[in-house]
Length: 254
Length: 265
Image (cartoon, rainbow over the protein chains, first blue to last red):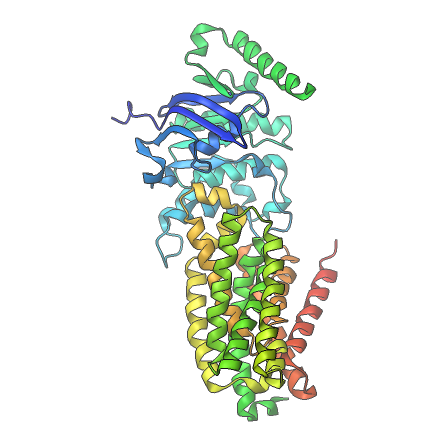
């Protein structure tokens, strides 16, 4: 059952805001242990799609099911880890250490009145180690670099032991070296821990080897189910990387 | 200095003041982190409508203040959620609106006198034994709820949407937080006064934030600042016969300035 039931099942999804169609007629499925990259031009609806999937926006038409349940009936949100775009922007004075922030990942599963249990502690520790931020645990979140924050936000998402990690291009202000390190950690999560990864990114070339499928979102979805068989990695990265790049520039001319 | 505790009224005021310091600083931490500082000012003015009704109609002003400020808190949340209004504009409208209503009620009822003055700026003389009991009971309840959900409130303050997607009932908790803040403000106006309670909620936390510590430490630093400023404010109020709200706020302002200077980079 687990292998056939998709984590996300989206059917004929439409979303419009202010009379403008942002997403139209999108149908897609996301399965367990997949690594999916989402690319597309700015304003093409990538972030909106993610927000609809997470129940932060209500679709105008169509249906989203998570683990076979409709969003309003879905209760096991700890199974989903979400790292938003603004993850690397933190108020410099926010009173929180890295550990405080990663602890948040356990908040929704904690029982009333109880402090963090042994199990919670273990999950937090594990998440920090996996994301390579254990050494930073007593540092204030506001004092970290962009790359470090990015990893802390992922550790926070991982602390709830999710089955799927959804990342909305959390890379503003992150340098190339940190970025590569981050991609390597994501690959590890996908390969070793079998965590499903959905990643909005512009760096499609860099992660081309890791991904199983590629979604291009520009109001509609183009789903490339088998990029590796259809194209060599190099070609694929060139094609989609270029396309994203061209669309991106095109958008800016207007 | 300790002779002030020989007076019953001072013991009562001090006890009430300490409870309020704890409540204001703990709830204030979440309010400040959520960028919601102005809500305390607004609710304090709404509470004044309750006080006015109480004074004119002969009900217990404290109880009326609790009821009206809870209603105002719900109205604010409702307006924010259902109309596309700027939240700071909503707060400004309600703040002046409630003050206007309170003044009209009091003027029509002919109760514009010293007792209203004490609700505006706080008075250590006015804290009755009944008030202490009310403050203790409601105060413990509020503190209990705040501590029970402190991790959730903290997460929401950090990132409301991420908190929501991780299964935290953000809407319900927001509602709960503003309701608790409303009760705390209503309880505080006896000692600190409705025009000054906002400062006691906001300034200890903002001062504590200057020390750039983790969450728990920041909470305790803020608590210590609030207790210290209420204690010194009340002492000043006693010795110089000044309204306690004003002396408390002045004390916390001194702490704020010191915190700013000490932590300047």
